[in-house]
Length: 411
Image (cartoon, rainbow, N blue to C red; front, side, top):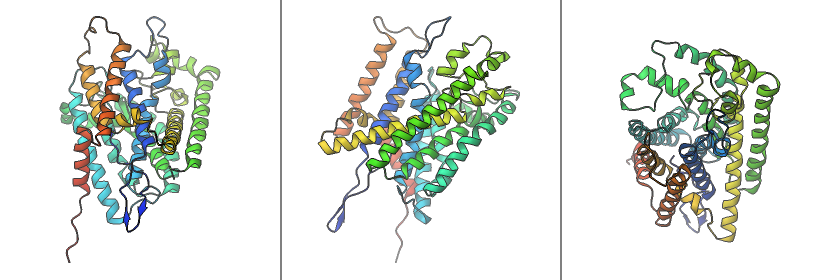
């Protein structure tokens, strides 16, 4: 939700100019924020009994949150050396700064977890991802590629084996709600939910940050890399989704899953297209063959990572165009994208005011979404024009500076 990424600094005679932010990265983050808000406020399924997927569900479900995570990895790569990762004391200093930033995000997430809200708040998981990625921040591009590929292939299988053991506990090691302060009293259950049994399983989602680190170690300001991200991302995303559809609809996967006791009564065809949340995904290896949103499978990770890479490529291209014509038309997205922690938190707090309550007279879900979306854009643009950080971004930035502070050597 917070970022430190910068473009390569431009040198002037005798002095290095302050680095500037990559507008395309902030714009992609802004698009992810608006996509997540859409899935929170507008229906992703149609009315019963058909439960047909809506356009919001088909387009944004699973992809927006994954884009956030990939962008987090990109931001970490850009803030820890870009193509030349830091090493030695500088690396340890950067890791300490990232860890302190994660603490701020976790505190905000735990506070939001106490709200009565029908939104799966991602912040505590996001903070845990920051901590888990610390060992990888010093790796170069080739090593990161191997780690990312391996994690995408292996982590879903290991999670599939571990999850039933955790769910068979008495009580099951699953929260069933957003992590809050009270859950710190049961750390085992909290960690099991964060890593394996919850809405955003950190164990598999480490893949997204590794993919983001790979992307962030590339020369993102070059047209060739931007085009490569767009084309390769779309190819990977398309092939992964095609394999998932074939497995479910042609090779018998959906029929096998429909026969499981845990899926009876669910509109499985619709859930496979929009969201598998609510299904425990146990008792059949066919679960690993889906490319469904929030499935956490290899195909799902490949599809959503590919989409994220393509989106990043598009926005980097648009940012490059904006620089050439000297018109920052991306400001409507890059503004809110530079302060997503504050805007996301405000959005969750606003949604909590209407949870289990009727909407005000004359209001619709679509109207509520556009009101909040335009509000987020307006606030983000104002802060960008004033060159100010959002309030929570400022807190995270100060925590990062405190954590990475190294006293100057004496003598």
